[in-house]
Image (cartoon, rainbow, N blue to C red; front, side, top):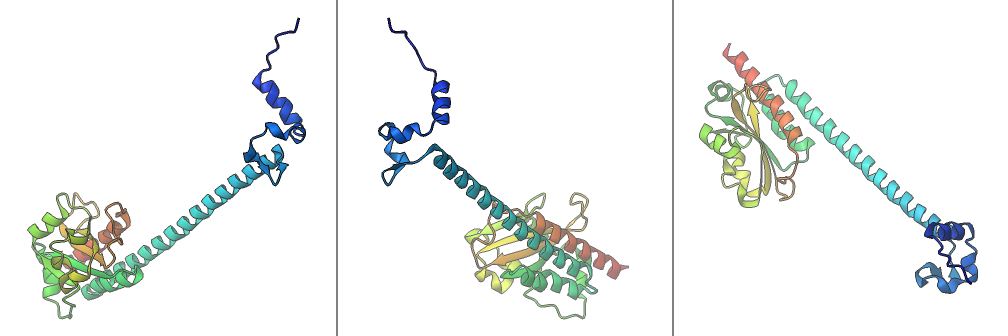
Length: 241
């Protein structure tokens, strides 16, 4: 009487793996997907192809990571250069120039301006009483309620795209029609925002509607604005002493 023998899957697998030439003699039991030019592909060839594919995927991922690291490094260097320009400004005019035109050029931004909270009398006086000629299209004085209604309470960076900026002229003046996306970043009188006053805002706009998006991180922009806000407050204190 024939024995009822049931082969386990792992036994079959291990035997076929040890005897790949079996498929050369019996190609008819293989799916067409693993045959090419009438020849049966060996298991080793299939494994090699799979490993090559995985290797290429890992290589692509590594290249992408290195590219992003290089790009981030360049961004940090640029922001650091702007901050140095702010910290080494010797006059209020040099400070505004560093915050606007220097930032604009280094970051390749369409338009950069500074808005001053009109309630900050010492900072306002710093510029209104100065003999320096400040470009009117770079420095704006905004009523406190207008500033707060835009930056909210507590104040935080605001990114606006398209028609969201319905009061854009307050921050960009005659250039507001050319702005399609913008980042308005609050300026504080103290690095600890809760201990400081809202001095104004650093306004960065661009003709491209996708230059600034609500999903973008604003940490670097806020770091830059913190340096500017502190410099403005210190200039005002020195001028008032």
